[in-house]
Length: 444
Image 1 (tube, rainbow, N blue to C red):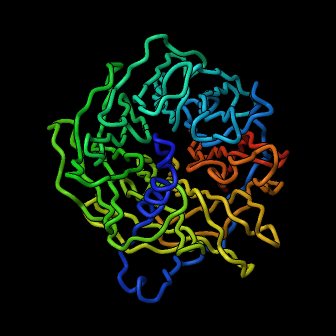
Image 2: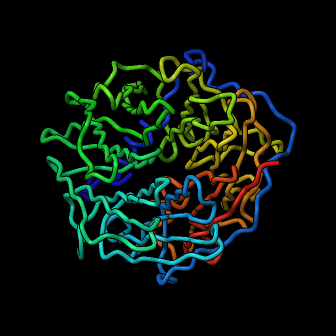
């Protein structure tokens, strides 16, 4: 997470991390331990080869990637990431690139956008329409960021010239999260008020129309935070909101009535997190757990990581389970869990990815891991190592980027393809400088 005024960067990062990982188990606060989910001893996830995504910026760190897949065409993938042009000023020197693949992730074409800013996010609809959200300005870095939305008619292979812009109050917006479902895109952001409080705002774009503001979760003097919305099969939009005072909740937006529900508490025990929290809904037509909603975060207790935590809702967001850890490593090393992601495939298989130091004896290098649940989050299989080479981000080539984006970003990308496989994207430092890699994980 990035503070737009550079002298406030450290304060905001700490506040975001503390916001990102709240829990609802009071006994866990006393014991310091969160129970793990049951272990599924099957080994059904098979990680494919690591495929580098080539960029024109071969000597610059590329971080914080997001990825989306075409809902019905297995060949189309779209990604976006930030290119850091000054390794000594990573928060003030990021520009935007997007990447499109027409062959299922084997080859990629890059569009280098002359925009500077933060937090790219992408989504694709069944008709091939694509959207990309971004906090940024053209040509030069500015502290007060408008929210920008780019659109494409060909799954991100090219982009329309017209760009929609939303200006904020105070110093603008902070973060973007974009999802697509059927004929609609939904976008959440934090919009700062003049008093430096922050609201969570929901935008909608339906049937190829421009994005419009449809709901606001008022901060009322508090600085709220957020993660991406989840969309249920009914079209109900689950809007997550977080606050460091000790609450994570959702409000449910009904597009038919254009009404936002009251708060549904997910969690009420704050912990210090590592990276963004994430949310996804199961809308698979073949799933036994249809419309189950999953809330995931990597959690730390002070300087020590506490693994990957999961809450879920069985009743469309009305109530939520107590959180449990899902990382079942068997090597007795400390958790170094960071930047968790979550997605659900068409058959209801829940996948969670993150980076961890479980393959490095001194745990200074990290790998990407992936674990699945076949029973709606009740049990998880042991994590599969996705990367075939560990990364130590602290290199000369990465400079201060390694401090600001230790896991390759404050979020990494995970999506599901039409065939039920999972596509991961991450920022990899195996060659000394952060560059993008992707891998396809199939399920037996």
